[in-house]
Structure formats: structure tokens, C-alpha cells
Image (cartoon, rainbow, N blue to C red):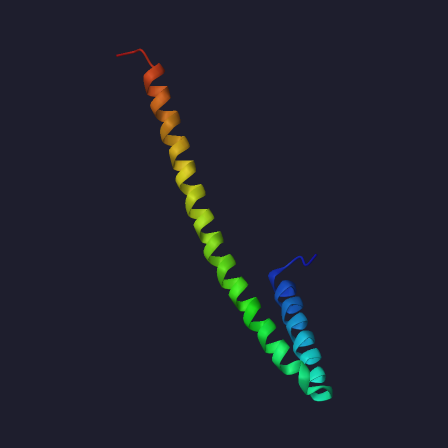
Length: 84
């Protein structure tokens, strides 16, 4: 597991370069791999976009739930306080 962001980005770009290298070699050796590779990349970008939208929606819902819990706790504490 990488310890720093620099190492993480380095490993990420190394993996991307490796994948692109494999795709280029496959395209040179067999032209029939170009279309499936392009379709696969389009599918991956669609999944990524879907995931990012879903993740942001979940963060928003979790923030609302946290706020609701805090407000409910404050309300119950106010109701239980009988020092009026």
C-alpha cells in the first residue's frame, strides 16, 4: 500500500501506461481488438460517471441524516429539560 500521495499517483500512472501499452501492442498484432477496446473504455467511463453521481448523492443523504440526528437529539434534550 502506498504511503504518500506521490507514490499513489506514481502507481496509478504506471498502471495506466501499462494498460495503454497492452492495448497498443494488441492493436498492432490484431486489428480486431481495437473495436472491443474502445467499447470497453466507453463502458468504463460510463460506470465511472455513474459511480461518481451515486457517491455524491450518498454523501448528501448521509449529511442530511447526520443533521436530522443532531436536530432530533437537541429536540429530545430540550423536551427532557424541565427547568422552564
